[in-house]
Image (cartoon, rainbow, N blue to C red):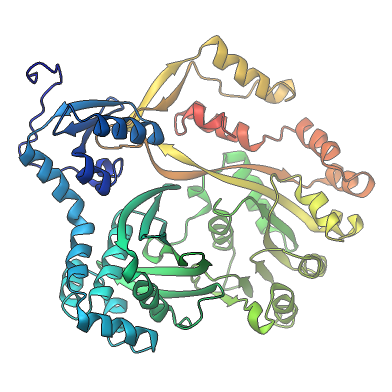
Length: 532
């Protein structure tokens, strides 16, 4: 290893090559160009930073701040100016195309932006047809705003982002991508183009262009590199202008099967038994973004849609399912979950999926549907599975109605899946063993004996091929099977602690414990389970 003169800083020669986006995301382009340093690699979990001037105190402070914010250790290398420029050019995959489009916004394009406000759009069809790399570069001469939106969308989908956030600040617009549950800043746009970008997205979704005071929702479909992608769009008024969030739904990836969700063999058996019943209420609980809808679709995918009339009421419809009559609620015209469910019950349904139980009328109708011979799937916002019972009672549902209708309640979260090449084994220390023992202390001995306690667990170790140490996410969950003893408890004393004690005696495992089991198998980092 060569060293720079008098500075004891190792020199690294990149050979004029750039670096992948997985590395670039650690340092915003704005910081890199301003301070004169760039991310150049990841080795043994350490972020390698290339710097032009090792004497630049401001640059070193900025590096320390960025690394601490990202939670990664770092090492500084001296690099040549040509290598620095080569890495900067790597950022141009997205920001370069956007910058070229911005350069075209002259007086003529400003006139075009004004036409957007009036609802005139002559290029929307181009984006809806295909946002391939070739198509995008063909659009740029016609409409720079269209180019900017298309490039953002293309790079988000290519980077396996689940969401795009376009957020106006005081003097600029921040664009962020959510990858594996974490938001990363991708680029900044001039504040002057914000309204035109928002207008472009509104045109694609048929939103009202002149409505900026109230939130709006919409969706559109595009083909990107031959794949059909659905985009669910939401606008939200903020102090500096409208924020836009696009949820990316890759139709071509298809709906997951129950086997792909991450259930244990025992839980999978209970779920399939509940789905096979002719009636009852199956509930999923968890926060927004916990994968509830994905699991609901997976369960619906298990039913015989030729034999049964399957109807869903959603907000919004995320994926289209063959054989399912899907309907989207529209509160603005008083088509709510409650009113929609009343209509569904007149459609001779066998199986009903209600996107969310939000109020007493919806809860009562769902219960009545389950009581009258229908199988009902729905979701509820609670912190755990057992809490769904007192939550429904608080809504006004009588225990004598809950007991015979509830079949199964699941609570779900999502955690990052460890990359095989980026995980490091950690021996079972007394401290780790105590954490595990304390977690399962009240589990009956007959079930405790079956726990696959390993001799080691794993932690994330970022690598050059997996910079965060995780790739993709998987479900962790707890499952409450409503048997006769639980039914009696609901009728007599439906408080959370009583039901929890009964369920625990039957071997019920909670969300944190399911995460630990997955940590034992090496698919989840053990330290991730401690944050639950």
